[in-house]
Length: 165
Image (cartoon, rainbow, N blue to C red):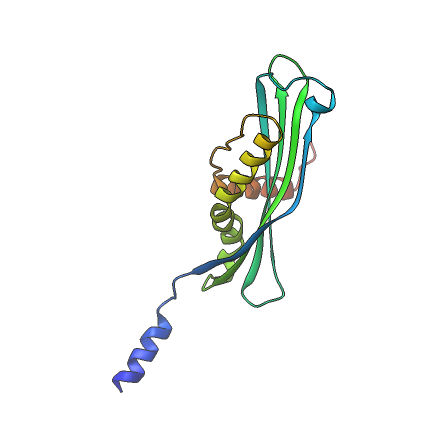
């Protein structure tokens, strides 16, 4: 009898979410050293702009998901309009996720998963910019929760019907 109660109690308790990083990789990357192509030295003070996009999808294997961070980094000279370099990178993590409610899976894939792989992407960006002849670009932390909330707000605003005057 006590054994049955323990099983029922265990089934009633929600399980803690579990996540394992199974792998991570660069799906696509492009680095253009525009200053070098023009034959100019890369000693100008950079003004760096970073655009971040996130993507996630379910894989064919049960409980496996892909979460991708897509960066577009453009560095322009502060004292002019000359572009120093452009870096585009699509960095992907493969995750095994269990015990996450269906309604929480989307934010989990676009907040927690990118947070786990971001330090590795940051290192790749630093190495690529340094190897490209520039000081290493050390990306600041990205607030994935704010990104997610902003994207939701943008989608809700675009879906609201427009009223004619």
